[in-house]
Structures are given as C-alpha cells and as structure tokens.
Image (tube, rainbow, N blue to C red; front, side, top):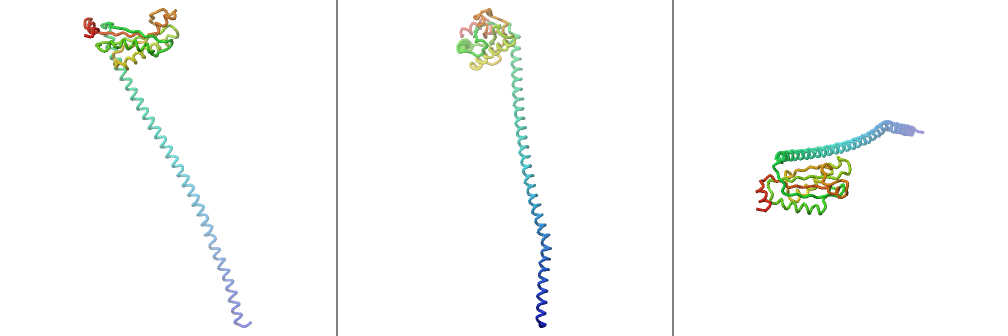
Length: 237
C-alpha cells in the first residue's frame, strides 16, 4: 500500500472511532435529561391531582358551610317567628285577663236578658246544624245590644275521668264562642267563658236523656243597663 492509501485508511479509522465516541458521549449526556424530564412530568401530574383533590375538598367545604349557614338562617327565622307568636299570644292573654277582671268585678250588676242551650253528641265538641240554627236565632238579639257580656258555660255528663270532662267541656264552650265571634264579629272581651265538666248537672246522669241534656253549652246574654233601658233595648227602641 502506498503512502496515500495508508493515510486514507488511518483517517477513516480515526473518523469511525471519533463518531462512536461522539454518539456515546451524547447518549451519556442526554439519558439523565430524559430521566429528569420524566420525573418532572410525574411530579407535574401528581401536583395536578393534588390540586384537583384540594379543589374538590374546598368545594365540598364551601357547600357544607353554605348548607350550615342556610340551616342557621332558617332556624333563626323560625325562632323569631315563634317569639313573635308567643308575644302576640301573651299580649292577647293579658288583654283578655284584664277585660275579664273588669267584667268579674262588676258581674253582680249584670242581669240576664236572654239565653240559649245547645247539646252535643257523646264525646263530641263539634256544632251540628241544629246547634248553629239555635245560635243564629240567639245572636239576632245582639245587633242592638249594648253594655253586654255573653256568659258561655260548657258541661258534660258524668261518663269518663273528671279531668278529661273539664277539657271536653272547655272545647265545647270554645266551639260556641268561635262560631259566634267569627260569624257575628263579637269581640273577645264580650265573652265570659268557662268549662265546668260534670260539676253542674242540669239533669240526672243515670238516664240517657239526662246525660244528653248535660252534654251542653249554655249561653246567657247579660247586661248591666238599667231595667228600663234594657227593656227599651229589647223592644228595639
């Protein structure tokens, strides 16, 4: 081989070695970068999942807090309404007690002008149509009445416990008062109401007919006007 050929062979050999060395170098330098890039992608994905989970928990917490706030608001509104209702009821009770006290103090000055009695079925406190008709006839006398009260007394027969009969007689008296007050616009201070249970019978309780008469509500129209004025009122003058 001549000198030129030997030089070419040496050059080619050197180039081949140099090329391999360059590839190995590049590979050795880029491999850690690829691995590092993969780790960064994994961390990025993990961070994304963590952020998503944190957002979900935050949204759930916000919804829970909003629900608790709404419940608290509703409870506060209910409490306010209950307090208002209680205050109204207390004021009504005070007004009625005051009115009733003034009535009771002067009760001896009142005279009976008219009365009506309605009866109820066994263990019932609902007015029948016949009861309403009788009350309507009675109420017709109230249109010109002045300075009057209505004494409403509820009663029962002797069947059952005494305490239950007191409550039943009160419900019967309430039914009469509610009917008259609603239909004829009679103010509450006109009523003097009491439930006497079985304490004051108007007929013997040992017969069915007697027990029926005792299951009643009696209403008396009382006035504190003078006899002459009351008589004139009764005549429509």
